Amino acid sequence: MQKIQRIFLKWLVALCIIPVFIMGIPVFIIVYPISLFNRKLVVRISTLFTYLTWSITSILFNISCRVEGNNILDNKNYFVISNHLGSVDFMLINEIAKMNNMIAHSKYTIKEGLKVFPVLYQGMVSVGFLVLKRCFEKDRKRIIRYFEFFKANDIPIWFILYPEGSRFKKQAQAISWEYSDKNNVPRMNNVLFPRYKGFKLICEQLRGSRISEIADITFSYSEGEVPPLWKFLLCDVTGHFKYNIRIVPINQISDYESFLYKAFERKDALITEWKTLKSK
Image 1 (cartoon, one colour):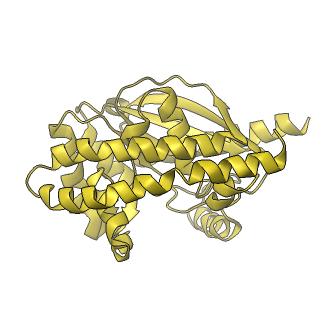
Image 2 (image 1 turned 60 degrees about the horizontal axis):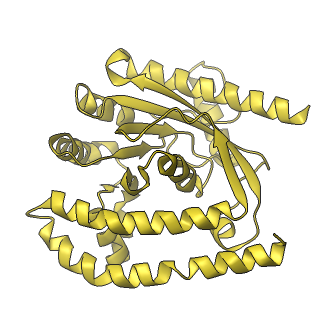
């Protein structure tokens, strides 16, 4: 397929998102207050819109890009942790979720500041995203309540967390290196130093629950710096994303901080290995 054809096809497919949003406006306005009384019902109803939106963006992504790796997951619940390449990351997770019939059930964190976009915000809350202030002490109770709900209900879930807390950029890398030097730990060149407090709290809530395993995913992009999301959706951005997955039972983790640091050391080594193989 030629470049112009790919761009035209992307714009054509992107137009399909518009009726989904238009259809969702009255639905989310109606169901949002219902969530105060029956949140489980609202999450299940809203999942239809998650499925439609994620499926359309998946088609857009696959017109010019591909994701390859060792898919060892299946259609069960996971606490997913991943390195944070850029704004396209949710599409990478969704591609793996789609392979395992869980694309409708991917749940992410969103900033409370999105309240300035009323219908969009209500929609994200309705589908079961976790709203955070980005201050751990203020978010602690929200996180506990959020997972109490999903532990108590049989709603399928892939909860996705990016422990780095920021996309991988040069400025963020410099801050990460400064922190590593200050704490006398080796620098990581392909990922940022992970933040463990939120990860630890989530693991504590999930320990012994039906969400019993961590899917630890590492991503790498073949073309260097990852372009912004809008270019993947609307322009002829091509590229190959590689991933590796390992599964870790939460009950087997004794030290959350040490586990998370070693997990990101592993990611750093994997990405270095992939880059070395590519350069040969």
